[in-house]
Length: 372
Image (cartoon, rainbow, N blue to C red):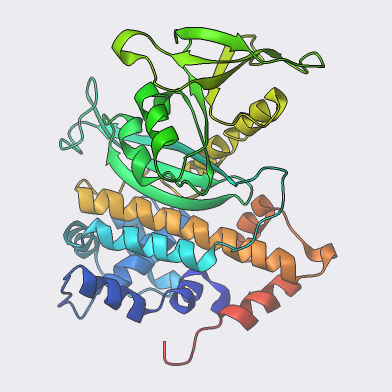
């Protein structure tokens, strides 16, 4: 494959140095380095995620082969420690805005599904004492909102590993979409807030198994339930001072192991089967987390400071957004006989053995200007 299709070269076309300079100006970040700049660090972290390098020392040996400016591992470590991770967070959300499509296919659902969840990355307590967990561990969380119908990252934020997931939800939710989440986000007081805010936040969220239902009224049906659904009713949730002010809908079904799955929602116009289908889409974010951990080296934290850790993680997610964009646009461009699955595209792109039609597509659309 022509060298113009390697990841760092494509990144230089999609996110040129001027973009990073702009965000650095917003954050008042001054880069006085000449030998290894913030932009060089960004390209290094991107290649490190994509090629699954094992750390700064490993990356030092591989940089030149990837067309990167070579420095020693101590310079890499110091740079990653000094650059505010907020810069990489802004770059990620800038990439999301660049790459996410503006259109969506109709699914018979009035709004898109926005699945929210978190993944935890852990290490020994001695490596990150600022992020302690129970026992002799430390860790951080990435909280992600995923547009399920498109497989696109929508929003991301970070916390240390011991922060409850519910605290991150306000920064991820979007009243233009249906929020889908697991039990960690099932706080009853938040349900009332969703119902009362100026533009109502619709949701399908799993409830805890010990949830108390106050004055349930079963919904009338003309046909028996399909699949594993057992109940569909409205009620207030909780009791005493924790009782919700509003009535919400509850749909109860069984998982494959015959354990109860209790769903709370304020969607009253869909069938119980549709509510169950919406919640089942939450599994897509688990697939997403598994993919990025397997393919973008996320569990392998290079540094130990917040800037180094979060900067690496945000850059890895940026690489995912770019790969997904290249895949979606490529499959829409090449002939049907040359179309690939995302897994095939990632493997072939990594090995630089893409079919000729894909190589032409990448060269035509992502060859950088001569001044880069």
